[in-house]
Length: 269
Image 1 (cartoon, one colour):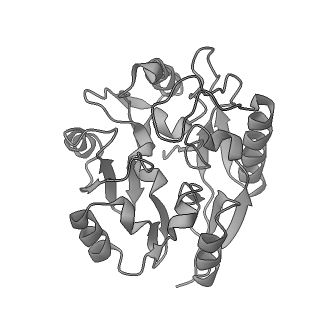
Image 2 (cartoon, helix red, strand yellow):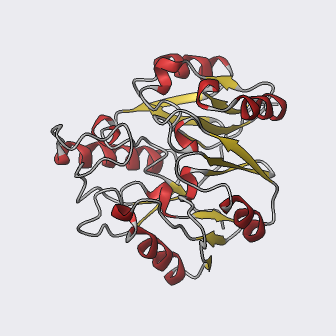
């Protein structure tokens, strides 16, 4: 079956206040210099890429004092017009949660309280009829039951074991088509690897070198994959499967552990 792209609706946040002021994942080094202007330009190029592909992009206003608010994927999970709000593990990001929940409430969405620590689409990814839910570093295992209750879809728990891949969306990308997903096996526990093999026997397996530049932190619209330009092996593997790949450079935002998907929250009405 040929791959088919579909128009998507995304929410993004301009990195006006982006900085690396603390370390809550292995990518972050507050002593390393960050070019905030370059981060804005790289983010703007990502947004322009989505618009050029025919997608809708809404913007949430950035707030001072929240340097990681650019990572919109962590702000909520949206499926079938219902929004599951988030609760962050780390206090440095706590004030992002009400900002995103308020945006969706004002936009007329049905917003459900988090109740437990979950970090949105960082760890909760819709894949066909299932929801893949990561745990191990951020989102708690107990929160997966809340995900199922809110969205009424089967939830598959996946355990992350490598702290570099602290969110599911750094270790796995939902593709659609026969492949279903691309992922890095080494980022998951043995049991979770077995689950992924059973669910997605034709998955694209990522090279660890591409995962190390957050190559799996990518966004697919069914046929076209927007991914870090440095993930050349993964890009080639995707093209072999019939996907069109669009490389973008988010090297400044990667200094905080983020890539294209981290900057992109899908709004599914």
